[in-house]
Length: 276
Image (cartoon, rainbow, N blue to C red; front, side, top):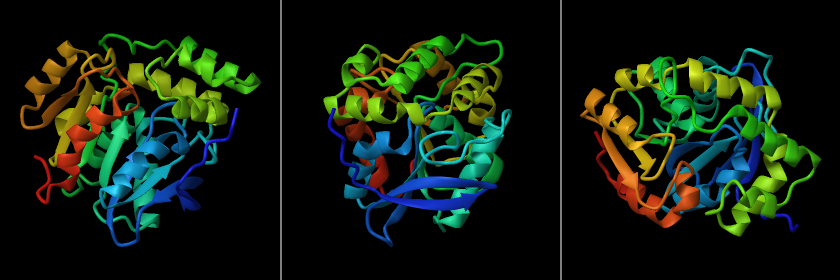
């Protein structure tokens, strides 16, 4: 399987007591955008998206979230929303990101909300929360069981292929299947398991209720992670925050329908006035 070329520049940053590996895209001086990936998505898996955000005129930073890719592993018990949010706060300070737009997918969307509420409640850039898990105490479980993540991780550890990955992500382009096959094994099992537990024990709606604008939520119209009933609850809870549906997409929204995702977020990212 050929190695996929990555178009970002790799850097290391010390933040919140850990060494973080990041990829950067775009020109210095452009508006900062921080892209936060999901539970088993090292930074390189978002390369295709970071390139497009850079083309829109942003300076894009994509971290390997703790326990993934080339970033440090954390001790057991340190993969909670408060830990991830503190990492983001440290990265923003260390890289001197100025009120960055934050685009978070899945786990990354939960992190973005937690960071905004815990660290910048009175001032932050636009938050684009893409299909955040709405599971939590007293709610329906996260639809992908832990065993499914571990199956994929163990396959990657012994050497998986794009075709094997396609079983789980049939809508993905070949390049993204190859990338996941190459880098999934860099995800620490403790990080994955503790994060999955957090999907069940930490309630996203606590942060959703406390968010201050500007913020929007983008979901896949066919997502089992933010199903229609959950989207209705989110709208009732915060009618002031727009929710956009991307047709033909499940939970992995930009991977499933990149054109539809970009059509949705491009006006938000290019608008001189943040969405409220």
